[in-house]
Image (cartoon, rainbow, N blue to C red; front, side, top):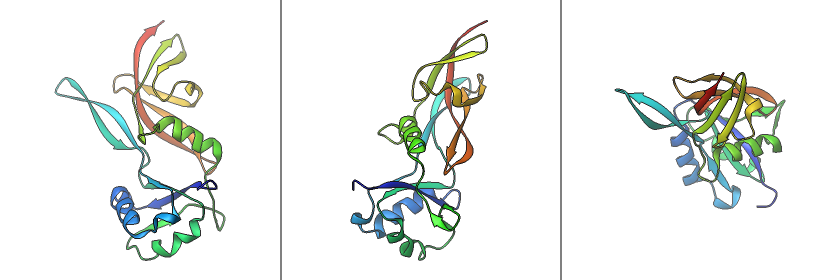
Length: 173
């Protein structure tokens, strides 16, 4: 599918995986390339020890890569609950190439955003490893104690905030 684009399905929060599995079971494989529910690996402190948990990157959203989203629409009408394509005006629109590039950089091949590591020198953040390398300008806020960062990106031209894992390994004042 050389002419495939990424589209966003807006669904009821908490039903992402269930809707993905149902779509895979009802859609003809020739009508889509892949269906993605992006996850993030987030550090979590429990009883004084750090663990990694897996959480949804975008609650209430599924990405579908297809050449023609209109072939998918009749199947969505059979779903109970809220499942619809995000639109610009009245048109089903693919997300922009820059948005796809950011998402694929963030998620990698396994469709999971891994933990990034960084250094703060004064007021300057430098990401030294992980999917946020080179994306420092998108980091809006850092919570060093919870090892997470709020990243600002766009989805269909709308600014959205996404929380991802970021460990600051060194601070130089």
